[in-house]
Image (cartoon, rainbow, N blue to C red; front, side, top):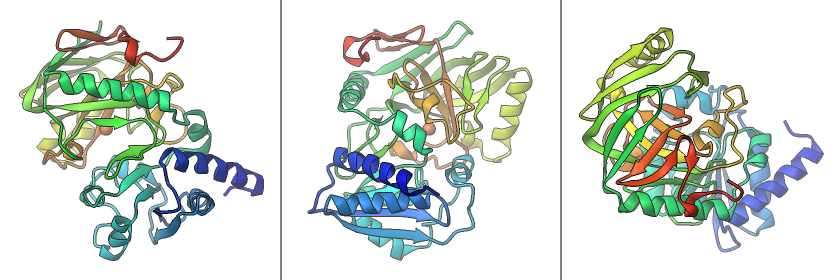
Length: 352
Ligand code: FE
């Protein structure tokens, strides 16, 4: 729990974040929290909302989950809003929901967004929130990527370990969740979700339109496990599904993990995109859920499992985010990332 001085710093940072989200005195802010988790964040967000003159409400759910967001990331099959229509109603009434629980991938989150409520997920440790505080410049670069993704029909990525895979891109241009996923760390747009901290974008292949091989190299990351690949893991992909996982002990362990869900849809290929946050670190030992790895500048974020965030119907509980370094990525014939370096001028961070 934060002491007095820390609490003041936290309120100031959260107030700056709420300003980026354009919260004002005409709006309602709802903070969703659970059990003892992130109690200091809940208090600081409510006080920051007060400072901006917003109407505030705290939706605090009793819960035995002491692992916080980690528990939901490892198994997406339930969340504390399921069977709680009263709490859901308050959240849908709000203009902005701060989610300190982890509703991502839930039907409840989509219902809240459809009500026009914008949502911000905040679960990372305070030091990481501070270091990766969002900027308007990063938003512009992420949105430039979104326009490029929207205009493209195919995405291909490769690496020196043997990856060569092509995604026939789903044409996503509707309201959420039928849109390209942009994450720049704040949200002022009704119905739009974001996550502080972040700095990347992602789309998805059509249901059967992903073909090829993805070979994770030593040093690449496995999330949510926060493991570093020691020996290459090779995924064979046919018609949008992983049909083989080959390699050494890492490959076997990952295959066993995916099989443990006893759900063939766990092997679907999910979102694909690249990272644009030049302040993110490549370090699986960071505390929290390692948004750094997902947003790392010039990575390719390969993922497996659900696609409900993109309007699809795969709601499997098994989701892997697999950030890979030193890849090359093309949208149609345009080079976007070459050996881990972001190429187009409109996507590049200053000094990179
Ligand atoms: Fe993901």
